[in-house]
Image (cartoon, rainbow, N blue to C red; front, side, top):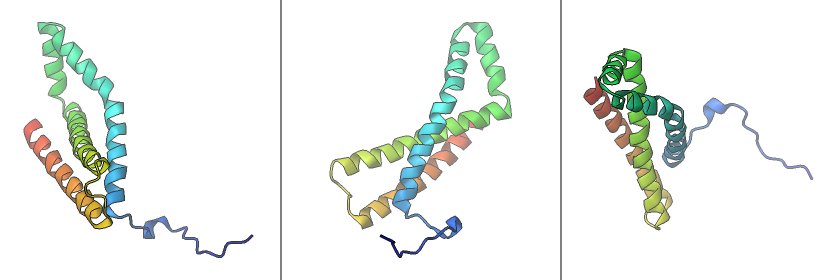
Length: 124
């Protein structure tokens, strides 16, 4: 049985709908949080260990790379919450049509970008 269907091997020509992009970004943000949680726990434990540890954590926070990592964590956390609420609302049966899914996908991406800007302004 031979199937005669087109095969598109040019991945750059494929464009995902906003709902699919939002869903993929939700998974990516979860992976980013998983990777960075060790650094965040270490930073919290160091800052709570005493005055010397707090001073060490404060000096680590002064480094631009550490601030970028924390900004990345905050951005991933914010987007993961936004997209997670979107998924929970859809699990309840609201907004499950194609048009509404595309709209909420765009909205979650836009809110994630706004959150990233707010977190960057607050952190820097």
